[in-house]
Length: 273
Picture 1 (cartoon, rainbow, N blue to C red):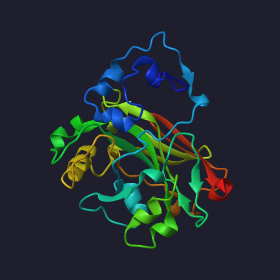
Picture 2 (picture 1 turned 90 degrees about the vertical axis):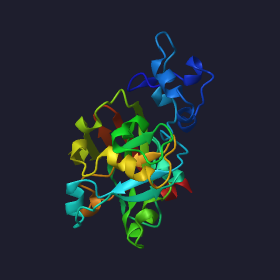
Picture 3 (picture 1 turned 90 degrees about the horizontal axis):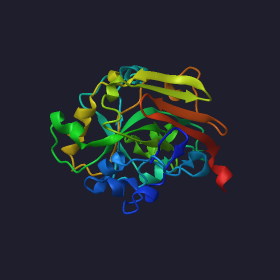
């Protein structure tokens, strides 16, 4: 349990019977509520600097990503607003956690950033009404939907460029729905080496969070731990002039009011060899 921007209390110290992985915790009815209600007063705190932080959900059943959901990104991409959200899928292996390296693949120099609000599903739901959609949300986190642009454009489907290993930052932690009752009031800011490259209110979404949840639930039942990426605002590196792509030694961050800041250093894949 994160109790501050710098410290946490290990869940096993407070509730040893609880699962260790977020997806397992969410699948246990009432578990997240029990954790949220647990008093951490007097518990021994551990520095976040002393541990490696994994993605908020390490083994999601599916990561749905929405494209073209902000007017600024629609415009810079020279597209028109789609009638429905355009979804793609990311895999679990494409993710990395807060402070974990974002890997620039050896086969491309066109690794781009996309700051996004991620919605974490908290319970199973099929054919969900928009009016009921928020009842299925466990909480929110920040996401950097890293995209390898040249590979993304090789096929009609953009999924290829969205699934290189450790290119999707997910974190720093889950903020529960009651802690962020109105995500639309939050602002999303992406920075590369401390320079602001994206800055937009979540309320500018062209499709509501409720609509996206309902839409996806008609395709297949949503499951606890599924992630919905709500899309990125304008300012992506591929559409800037001059273009801005991530390189070894860069640091990219995604901040959302009420959640926190996801930070990832960028390293070359060759460093891992």
